[in-house]
Image 1 (cartoon, rainbow, N blue to C red):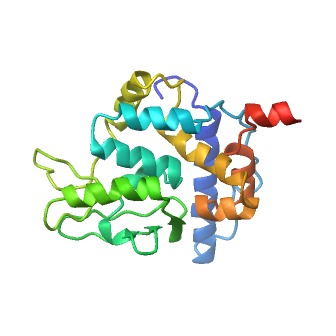
Image 2 (cartoon, rainbow, N blue to C red; image 1 turned 90 degrees about the horizontal axis):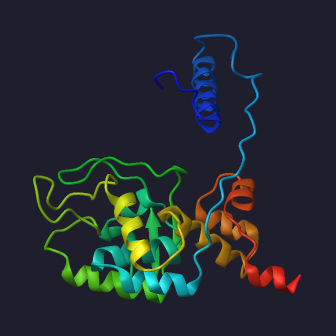
Length: 232
């Protein structure tokens, strides 16, 4: 960190990882105690985020410069997928007949890189018709034998999984073009959870979002909308 104090969230993440490593060492009878077990994490203030409403979602879709971007935005907003889950989605994960999308670990293959979802467990989420229609267009435009839903179109990595490097920057360009308030791609996922919570119990939101702890869903992913404040 070149003399800078690391962020509290970064310190907490390192603490959790150290605690996990020493737990595994204990399980393997390599050591007898975990020096990190008694250390408590510091509280981290929740970062503000922007709830993307249906009208803003439509503006993002209309402002998208490519079918690929429309597909990524639809999967984030309509299915609640993380960006990494979107980019590692393969056509075998999409079930058009049942209108479902599967998020699952990938083993390395010829044109496929090994990948594990953040929550590690496989989960299945509904595929609403707006997102499904865009995926149908993407499949019709896909090259023969194309494994990933979203692929690099040129360069040495042509046909391979799209990388994250420029996604964040390009999303901000698209967001400004659409006239949407400052937000991140991840805010699409959080907005999905907020919308879903208005219709189903919280534990269902937790399951579809892939959260191990329901507190994560409740504290970090749900926003009180303006119309709910007006009704209070």
